Image 1 (spheres, helix red, strand yellow):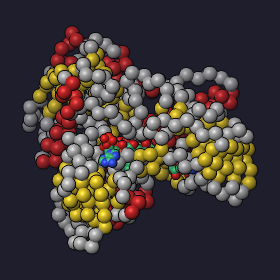
Image 2 (cartoon, helix red, strand yellow):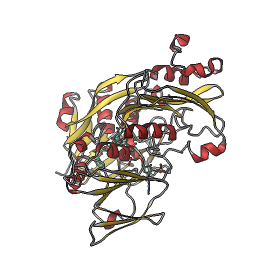
Image 3 (spheres, rainbow, N blue to C red):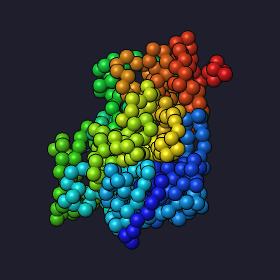
Image 4 (cartoon, rainbow, N blue to C red):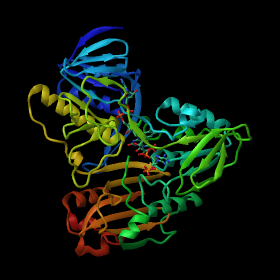
Length: 473
Ligand SMILES: Cc1cc2nc3c(=O)[nH]c(=O)nc-3n(C[C@H](O)[C@H](O)[C@H](O)COP(=O)(O)OP(=O)(O)OC[C@H]3O[C@@H](n4cnc5c(N)ncnc54)[C@H](O)[C@@H]3O)c2cc1C
Ligand SMILES: NC(=O)C1=CN([C@@H]2O[C@H](COP(=O)(O)OP(=O)(O)OC[C@H]3O[C@@H](n4cnc5c(N)ncnc54)[C@H](OP(=O)(O)O)[C@@H]3O)[C@@H](O)[C@H]2O)C=CC1
């Protein structure tokens, strides 16, 4: 396979980041040669893009043959291989198979790998979920399993708890409420109530509106986690819904404020013995470690690019690493520029797509010696997802991240229907959690971006009987 290729643009990785970078370059500079290095013949692509507002985007993600990318870029060369080494001085990338690719600018989109709990190396009954293969392995374990332990409190754990059935589940979280990466304790309670009941019709339950001024103590015990933060896509968990263990029982126990201390294989009724940090022992068939991702910096380089505290390749607002002409985007990157007040990094589809689009524009600007500004999407953190069957939209500093101690929360909740949380500081909206079909996305986006003083509206801003939108038209 060895040989030499000369290209203007080089993109590494066939996830959402790599494919978005290729698609954007296909629009910006179709006549220039472009190479994508992808270890897999399948790559990710985005479809059904719908805009809830200027920056709030929802889309579907599918797998497609890498060769289909040639339809959009006539000068695309696909190398089915893995990047091994970058010689940044001579601008040559070398693959495992010995192909040398001479580039002018390159973008690293190598994604991340699951960060598993310790003991995972000793035992193949501790699984992480990242790609299609890991889901197939999980499905096999589910079919024959009686009891599983899920550790972690983010997106994957929440989706697994929601989608699996016919198996006893023990969910071990280190917070005092569920799904802490995405929501607050109030929303967790809203979801937990729905576990117990059928969805309600409008009018079955009263709407509650309340304002809460937080003290430091409140915040410490409940809200305001510093969010840390790929690669299957939305709806991956639907595959689990039809995978039922023949054992039949279905129970969920959530154990709060603990971690897994040790896991060992034993010769007892259940093959795994998990000891928690509170001393309790749980016997189970397997463990799902849904404990975050680590950037996949799985290649060497003559000059090592600077890394962020999360181990990601630190990039500036143009997505360029500390090594000139080497850009990075998606889960492998650490957003190292001074962030806009209502944006922060979370390793998500949306951000991988936004970063990669930005990287492509900056790479094109470098090659054509032109100027480009950072995209507007980095002004506001937005995330649209589905949790426990509900639409969830997260905007800005939705959990008060980095706001200190003097902010207010305005809540409106209708059990089984909607949960709306506004985070206000100095009377201005800083973030919001919108659960259910609230239709408030666009208004919230405008209120956060324009920083309109909402003091004159008092609690009416969330009064369901007042159409507050009218005030801002
Ligand atoms: C189970 C699961 C569910 C998720 N659900 C959601 C969701 O609902 N919403 C959401 O916003 N986000 C979700 N995410 C997160 C999202 O998938 C990631 O943020 C996103 O896929 C990151 O894209 P990426 O292109 O940076 O990385 P990846 O998708 O990981 O792609 C990286 C690619 O690079 C390749 N690669 C790695 N190293 C090399 C190398 N050395 N040479 C060549 N190729 C290489 C990999 O094989 C891979 O194809 C989910 C993640 C998981 C694991
Ligand atoms: N619907 C969506 O948008 C989804 C998004 N994703 C994305 O995919 C990626 C992987 O998901 P996931 O693995 O859930 O990662 P997340 O980063 O979302 O969550 C990881 C969770 O595990 C906890 N944790 C980390 N280490 C330990 C440990 N040693 N013991 C106990 N708990 C631990 C974290 O707690 P702490 O915060 O305290 O560190 C956090 O609650 C993420 O980027 C996520 O955003 C995944 C699924 C769905």
